[in-house]
Structure formats: C-alpha cells, structure tokens
Image (cartoon, one colour):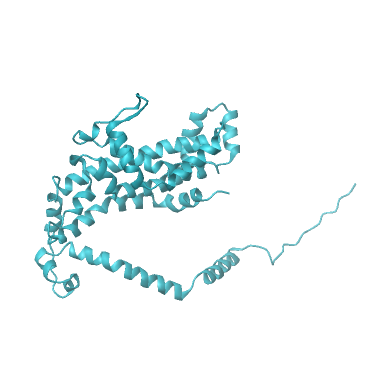
Length: 322
C-alpha cells in the first residue's frame, strides 16, 4: 500500500524567530512600563534615601560640627574624621562596648537563625510527605500560632525558664538557671527559635509540598529512606525557601531589642542595646550613634546580598500554594 508524502509548509504567522521574540519582548516592556510611574518611583527612592545619606555624612563629621550645624553644611564646609567610628566601637552606654556587643549579636543571631530553620525544615517535610493521623489539624494549630503576639508570650516564657513547669506536684519542665550565667545565650536562642517556628514551618511546608511526588516515589523505589530523601533531595531543592527565610530571621534577630533585653544576661546584651544608649545621657553624642548605626548594618547587608539570588524565588514559592 503506497503512502503519499505530504509537505507541510511552515506557518509564517506563528513561527517563532529571534526577531519576533525581541519584538514581543519590546511590546511587553512598553505595556508594562510607564514614564510617570518610573519618575514617581525615582522621586520616592531619592526622598527615602536622603535621611540615610544625612546619617552617613554625620557619621564622618566631627562631633563639634554635628552639634552646631546641619549635615548639609558638609558640602560648603567639608570636615572629615574616622574618630567617630573608633570611639563608637570602644565606647558604650552600658557595661559593654559596641565592639563587645557586636560579637554578642553575632553569637545570638547565627544560632537563632540556624536552629529554627533546622527544626522547621524537618517538621515541614513531615507535614508534607509523611502521612500520620491528625496531620491536618496539627498543621492548622502550628499555623495559628502566628497570630499570638510576642508580647503576650514573654512573661509566661520567662517564668517557664526561671521556675519551670509543675502540674499537680509533678515536674513537667525544669527551670533554667542559664540566664544567671555570664555570656550565656541559650535562653535567647530558645526564645527566638520558638517565636520563629510557626512562620518557618508554614513557608517551608508550602515550598516542600510543591516538589513533584514522582521524585519522592522514585527515591523510595530505589530504597531511600526518609533521612536520605530529606538530606539528598529536599534540602537542595528547598534551598531558595530556606535562604529567603534565613534572611528574614537573621534580620529580625539582629535588629531585636525586646527579646534579648528580657532573656539575655547583662554580659550577653546585643548591639541594639548598646546602640540605644550610645548617644549619652543627654543625647549630646548622637554623632557616635550615627557611626554605630552604620557599623550595625554591615552584617545584615552582607547576609542579604549573599542570599538575595534565592530571596524572590523562595519567597514567592513559599508564600503561595497551588
């Protein structure tokens, strides 16, 4: 039986070429951009940046000039000094200098970021891929914990750390005496981990649950257990979500004043506590506070720019499902 070969001519109307792609991209860009919106965004950015720029200029001006004239006079009568940064690092309104509290902030922020992410990633994997009774109800309960204000939990948590928990004469939870130990950060780590856990589990669960089930099933067929699946597949694939939450958590802990002030001993206070009192009793050394402010933002900027390539992708994937 003979068959006839049919020569189908290409559809020139729908054929994609590099020239057509560039044309479509230009048209889409023209529709999505507006000169008015761009100009308004630029104006807002400039206005938003002016106070920060003024603070930056003040951090390099001598204290006498800062107390007698505005920062904008720097352009007509420029004066430059690095003594503000040296004095800020070696001074402090508390028992600690800014340099010592800077190290304390690192000692608080790094574990307080790693601990909740590690626990939340395991919990998110369990909620997403390990079927057990009451999984849905338990996940809703964890999600609902996000609405509890931190201020309401501070006093009960401090009482739990100090006195423990006893019900009917039976000790349920022993009290911690670590807050009275010099250079102890354990209670601050635990407090930050508890406050971060609900949001971390929610974001990581939504990301991990969207991983194709075929990959998980193929790994199980090959004999992989939950540990191998989690560490070899889930963690690498969920790295964008992990990195995006790590940025949020690190910035929150680094800028925190309330939790650290309540749970940390006086020898372990963070940079925010020292920075708060750096300007002096009468506020006449606020130029040192401006220098200390820029010292304090160095680490958050490094963390953000190091992880920013994961930030948008992880945040968008973890915030929505479906």
